[in-house]
Length: 591
Image (cartoon, rainbow, N blue to C red; front, side, top):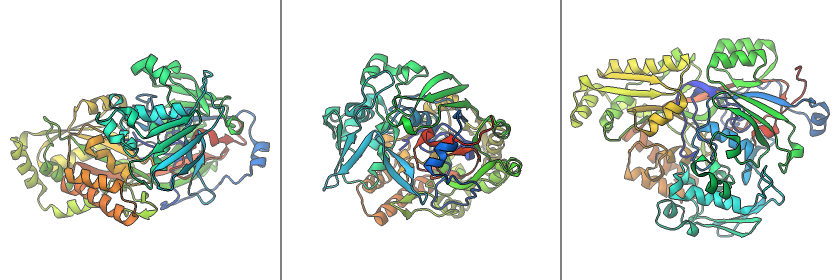
């Protein structure tokens, strides 16, 4: 999914924290500093958490919260980078997704139950049911919802969104999610008209979605942006400017509307009084700066300019903890930083012997220690240990096909030279372009460290550079790289959310890597209901991707250390929840 989605790159930077969650990630490395825009306090997943220290849990009853809540309700947060679009059908980064979670109303949301687990809650759909054959979902759309311009929000807006995401001309990066819908793949490939997609609106308040096959995780995909409502009239009027960075081009029907925005500087939200559940939204405004330097973010957190953030530096962690003014939560997140290999013509790594040789010489632990103070966890699998198959464990920390690859290749340099010769290249004159997007000092140390490892081990040259996110994204789409350092942040709790980013029919990135066996395993897993069997299929697919072809090289899994001001209440700690900022409020803020 997200998907698949563009997620950024590298290193310890942006936030997985408090409002982070979904998707598509454009994240950076591990201890992301809490990108506020995203979903709500998603800094962590409760199951399989590495460590949790919550000294000030939010235990107030609703009555107490109402009585004690501050009169002036606002939150100061940040976004790690400017979104590439606010169009839910074409966006592919977590930054934009974070905004959409707060300004649109999905059919359903994911909240946290009393045990910290995930629970579906009604949103745009006040109820839903599944047919006896397991193939059709009927969503009953809430009546009386409106867009901020006064237009009615109804079932047609949700149906249009699904159809537009499936239409080939939209080029939706998450179209694979719509493949689960009847005729979804055929529509997306132009083999059938969009009218034959399994989506119906019997009336203004009923949305019926018929699936291609039974799918045990379908409701999780419904929480993703491709299912968020869209305005047909505005798409037709604005064209490719729909969702562009101007307030009038961004339709709103969610808990917050955008009061002001300055590109690459700030987004200011204010409460949407027309939101169907506005009575339960306490925040009146949210100030979200664009910040991506860890020291700047940490200092802003300390001085009160930010109300929460993920903090990676142990010195900053100690300094903040000593004040007693923060709730700290530490968790291993469902997030993986990885290298993506470019197999397009002209790339210097378009040979699996070359990619396997590169993957075999990387010392993740060394870079993690020198660049990030040992905070992230070395990744040897793409799917993080926190992600499950229908509730069952999938991968274990410290294990995976990348470790097997590293142990099994005895002479990476010889393998590299063999691959270069097959491409007609002189190994000594090859220059590999390694591109990342973490422009922090930690990001520079990390990418230069890996540069030295590859050069010393293989005898080639590596041109390593980090770029601002938008520049990085443009270079990625233009194939102006050999290796791109990205990150994938889980949208929902299933391995397919990660692995399908490499499915050739709906690949997230234009790498040109294709493996028929990998694709067939992904397709078989989609229609397999048994958790054990699905796990086996997806494990085999992951091994092909990482061990056999090394088309993707996992680097690290994110560990979030979120520091949240004690006066911030209502935050959820379940990573997969998608409630957004609407659940937050403050009690006892001094200023």
